[in-house]
Image (tube, rainbow, N blue to C red; front, top):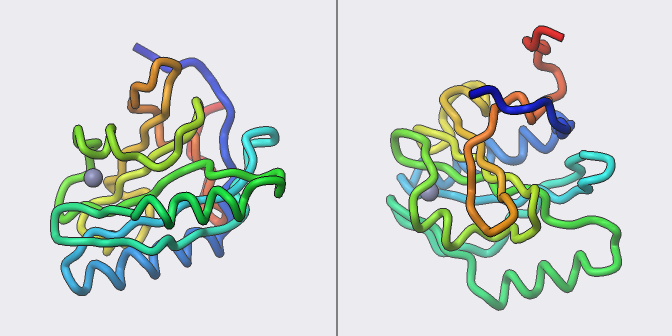
Length: 158
Ligand SMILES: [Zn+2]
């Protein structure tokens, strides 16, 4: 089945850099890590990285409720919101049942990117998987092409 053409989010180089920096720092301790991407849905744009306070281990991460509330308050009225969550896994990238249940973005159309190998790969999207929150609350895998990283060649055929 082919996903229908949809919006693509531009991801600035600096956002990719800060994301990799955090995931790799956590990875050096052999912990998962998580960041949030702030931005807008219309137009589809990522503007900056939020590194939330987080409790991590080799197999999971958790952002305390108070920290999630602090971020929500900070964004309220800014015109921007949490567009995506990015987290790392020890080995393979997939969306676990815990990831489904505890994902921080809550708006339909939000994205969740999971990177393999504790984020150590050279390219952020190498081996990664991307999920989108659908109406009804389920996370569904979508093509990585929904993210357009600055500085990467556009490999789509349009
Ligand atoms: Zn996970």
